[in-house]
Image (cartoon, rainbow, N blue to C red; front, side):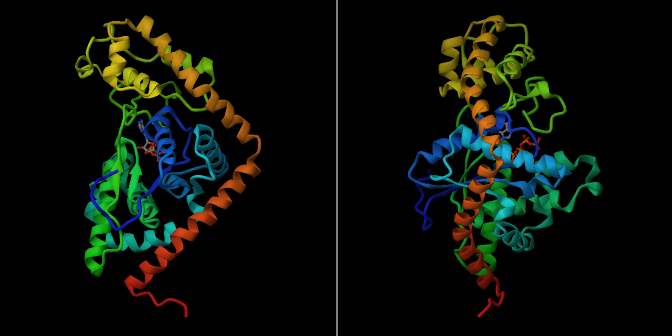
Length: 342
Ligand code: AQP
């Protein structure tokens, strides 16, 4: 946590879109680190951001299934719904209510600069949804409606957290208040940018057309081993130093994954596996991945057998979340000048 004094009680918020399969990048860059945060003496709120997911088309049945599966993934990976607050975004309407106000604070130019908007809308911006453009203001609301001070995310979300800070600062400035905190992005460890197994220059992503490019958290041991065996690499053995990985994106990605799964630094990983050829290293990595991920997949499958239990957990989470968010939204309304019911 930051050493800077703040009047805000430390509170952690982060979310994941239920827009497809939870994958190794989401796990190492986000969920695994959520579990670390949960072990600390700080309130933690984790969210299935289903309203973000529909900024691009989602089949309704798939969205419902992915939301429950993501909740199962969180729990199977170690999120305890008693210790943390686990929610589906659409069950806490305060997120969308605050987002409207933040839409009126954020500037068009800020949104246009977002890398994710440029990448996802691409040349087809006229056809993209208004929601996709406004997505970062909803993300700011997700965070600020809890006065969250820390947001653990992968590298790709850094820009959106910086935007959240800009929106909070402009709100505070425009209304002459010190109401929203300066949220810190927390981007740490070897797994903050897991790359595609087919192309070391692209991040591992739910929306990659090639299933071979990612390891899904629901993959069985055979699928995990096969994907790692077939992962693209160069022909040289692993270097003896971490610097030697700098110009070798695919090798660097596999060593990063190894380090993140082993919970060691890249330097320590290279001390263990430097000099190995991929014929030796890939089976080692596959065994490690199966050892760490298979129990999570098994537990996810078990939880998915009882969707009513997942729904009950999310319902309880929403109640607890609303108890925090509603007073913050109410105060925001007062600051803005909305007349409140007597
Ligand atoms: N490849 C990755 N490496 C490390 N962290 C990652 N995250 C996503 N991909 C990687 C982190 O996972 C959290 C949730 O991400 P998200 O699902 O909300 O959005 P995303 O970043 O857009 O994820 P995808 O998989 O790439 O989805 P699509 O394909 O739909 O765009 C975030 O903390 C993110 O940093």
